[in-house]
Length: 448
Image (cartoon, rainbow, N blue to C red):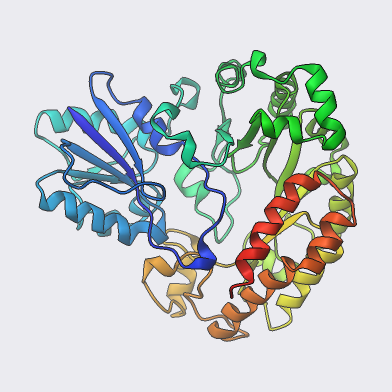
């Protein structure tokens, strides 16, 4: 039996073509829970073409909202050839009745529990239209993802690791807690350690003499050359202090550089910041979201305190940790001044890298339900739900002003003068890494 798992990719506009392609773990995890007597292949359409005439018995698709229309096209092509298609992922989970119009079966929620049942039913010719697990995945018992099914040559040399799932916060714009549950579930440290030993064999680290020599050029260069780079994909690398301290202590043993997501409040935890730095943390992705307390309260992220942002940034920078900031525009209290406010904040506080997006009220989120009730949703063209297009009517500015303002932020943040002030002039935190990141986006925005 042959199964083809596909990560679809829509045709992107130039400004959407992010330059560092990252691998992914969702389909490798699905492949890992597939019975061993089945041949499994993964195709990432962002890197390779789909062969619709390939002899396969079953196709599995996953897609977030902007890619859902492309996923439906792929499903239609395979079904036209008589190949059954199963679809999972966030979009299908939030709109299963829509998805089932294009596929034979829909997996709702996390797929690792349902997928083996799907295969059993398929073998018996009794594939059900919907599969919904009765419990959350026990990630303490998950097998390691099948990374061997991804072609490493297609991706930035960065290993991805999942250490926890879920989120107790219920932010208006986010679907993480709805999909993964509203509490953190941590993997056992011994399992994380087992995975790290495979990803970063200790005998593959650079020898001390070579490392010292290259460090004279740039302290990060040995890690980049030996590809000892890790991205922890969790929504929060600090689900609880005890687990996080044990995790960071473990990471110290592997001589690597890593980054992940954290709340702004970590800037006020000196013990954690010290462990972040000692464990090789090169960057924290902080969701500032807005500089307006009213916006933050409305999106149910009132625990963010804009008055404390500057101090948090300074404390994190003091430990040699870079900051990747993210912001959202188009919120109900945003007027035409928001674009300059965010840009000035990024430059004046010397954020090492920062992206601003238009809020994308994806199906299933509280923001979508609210805006739909208010009659402010402008389109259900899911391809436009990419955080670069305005798909709803803002209150204080027009949709056109919102899209123009977003591009204005990107062009100013990634201008040469901004890069000089934030990266070269100071505080010069991991300048090699951040110069590359910023330069790529400078080149991208010059074509606008």
